Image 1: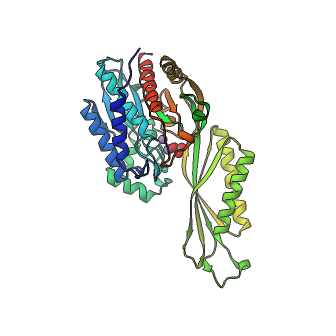
Image 2: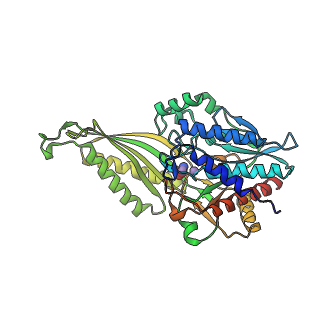
Image 3: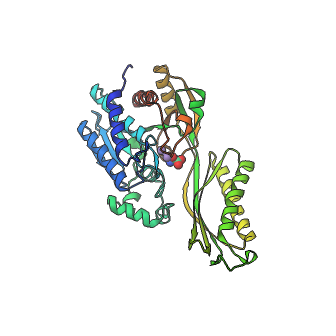
Length: 410
Ligand code: HGY
Ligand code: MN
Ligand code: MN
């Protein structure tokens, strides 16, 4: 097995995609179903069509490029990732994996290989959760609930806006499930988004499992009042409870859940004026654990803490669950194929767990799912500073190609 991707064509595509929604500072701003994300998906289908691949869009808005097997009853090996980004994100997160998958399938087509599987490159809708989170892949896995569409972490209004722009419906999302017996597996190349590979100078990460993520919107209700005339000891200031919660939550997790993380990415005070004591503080709470039981324990501790802090500051706490995805182990079969592919290219590799969420954790529910990591410079991601050396990108794409051939033949 000596097949290699075409690095020039791969780079040309990667750079073209990075122009769509470019921040001008090295990153991209392509939130799910935004005009920029829709433009990126159109670009993907056009490139796939030019390459002679069959293009499809399913009822969850997942965009695909397919290289059919000569056997019409063959199962499908999915190679995917996502073109949506976090606001002001990096140009590698998601995009690298999708363009590498397109390049790998084109390489198979150019080589005239006849495989016992259909190869399908797939761009999943809203991986990042600016609307729901791993939305398109949950739809394919059949694990998406109607509930999660009603109160998504990006807000129902923003979800409806994106759905209208892209011509999507709740029913469409809920009817996009693929039958597990039609699939031969799922592979995804992705940047590590952390420092481990870069620090160890190891070239390839074989992902063993992916973290579980829960999200809540917390609202602390206090009393808006005059910022100048209200005595300091007579205030019911929502901002104080919110701030106390953020600081104590961090201390608690570092102390009691050292292998977990917690983040408050948004905090809004209302009415929101210089001279009004905030009557409402709204926080976006997200926390992660590699273990399902621990994720539940972490949730109980954080919500318990949020209640105690609310009482301490005389505030009423409102809690709304806006997201949940289970931790997922990656398939041994996929991990073995990835490790063998790395060895066939004389690339060092190590097994590691993903602290980032990915579409692969949805697909793990219905098929053999595997992920390949390549190093992130200084471990930075979800920032325009996100960067991976191009040689590492090419290595990742070649490992994806060869792992796909191994999964296809096994
Ligand atoms: O948030 C994450 O972990 C991933 O980048 N979507
Ligand atoms: Mn990603
Ligand atoms: Mn991301």
